[in-house]
Image (cartoon, rainbow, N blue to C red; front, side):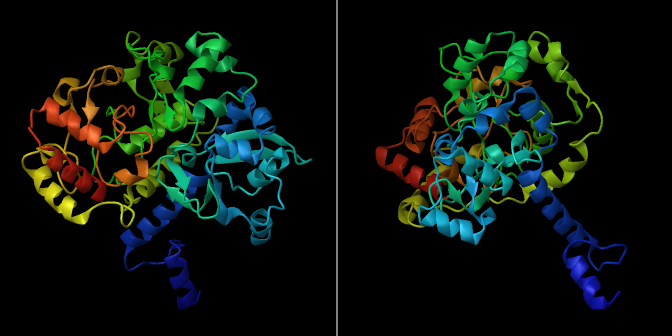
Amino acid sequence: MSKRIARQLVLLGITYGIASADPAQDNARQMLEEGRRTFRMDTFGSEQFWGGALRLHEGVAKVSPKVALSVGLKVDAEAIPASLAARIKKGQVDMDDPATTAALLKLNAVVGVTGFFDERGGLKSIGIQCALCHSTVDDSFAPGIGKRLDGWPNQDLDVGAIVSLSPDLSVVTNLLGVDDATLRKVLKSWGPGKFDATVFLDGKAMRPDGKPAATLIPPAFGLVGVDNHTFTGWGSVTYWNAFVANLEMHGKGTFYDPRIEDAKQYPVAARARMGRTRPEGEDLITAKLPALHFYQLALPAPRPPKGSFDAAAAGRGEKLFAAQAKCGTCHVPPLFTEPGWNMHTPAEIGIDDFQANRSPDKRYRTTPLRGLSAHSKRGFYHDGRFPTLGAVVDHYDKHLKLGLADAQKKDLVEYLKSL
């Protein structure tokens, strides 16, 4: 093998036994590409659940691209051939025809969804990927169609509406012990940009105030150096990858967490023995977790759009953040969360304990603040209860008795927008 070919292979992260001057860099490059591929394309065998058990593909087969886009599904413009893209631009493709949806699935152009087809070209099953919830697009081609933005939460994705396309939800109703009508009512209540992972553990679909218990789909960017990666802790991002791939995506793998065997706190999970999940046959998840973890930690938080904040006001707000407003006590720069165990009781942050009590530690995580512009559409906090950053600042001004003037609050908001 020539040295030139050997160098090219190393650049691709493929060493084939060839000694490398920097094995760490080569490994990082290979892990990055492998993790990206897993994040974007791997279904972990979930098609056996979504297609085999729920028969979701039967509902999807009747959906047009226009309807699919209306419930938040996104299309990767870079997966569309130039000739087809040109026809779409000219209005020569029927976006009201379900056959067009099938064509996009065959191109692997629907972000986070893989279609499986029979010999005649009919959709026979469907599987999902991490990117379904944790990627969106930049709308550069058209609304809902553009280049992928991995790690950005899909704030338009109506998971409940999509799942409701299934003609048979009996596997879920049997798990939760409810009837079909009740389940579909709960799914409808979630709305865009929200999902309730914990309902499949504790069966609590509603908060005490009667509002849905679903939480915002969180970002998967800017997590390097951050301990605990969900609103209420649970564990690291690799823990959550294993949890979601096995228990929420319904892939085929191994998952162990004796905490969810507590029948009082997690009756659904305990009854189904979710804390000791083992696959029937090959494990399609576990070997992929390291590279997936690596890729997600490599995703940087996006910078705020140009002109989206007042730089002078942000400069004043930065000083307030570190001093009078006390924000930096918990949101420690440059991580903007605590180094170490970044968890707090509900009383410390001045909110109710419902969602915290659904987690093993019964606490809320200090959320990292970088890239807020990429996930502000549905509000702030785990459930979007604060519609604006101004409302968040008002909450802490009152709770911590900060005594901020209105002008100071505005400066603080501009600083948060600048992160």
